[in-house]
Length: 80
Image (cartoon, rainbow, N blue to C red):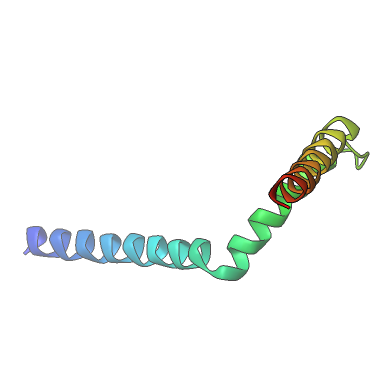
């Protein structure tokens, strides 16, 4: 009977671990959590941990946007 009780206990522990894992996966996959992680990632790119702006990254993105706009303007002028 001891082996049966041990197996039953192992099954119960496995079930509890599986339930916790599923709960964690559901939480990680929720759109709200995904959005929070992405917002935090973008904020971390533009702001350092002390809250100061990361001007180097801001300038890089600004230059990229300006270059893209200039390219669009150039393409429009050539296409006319």
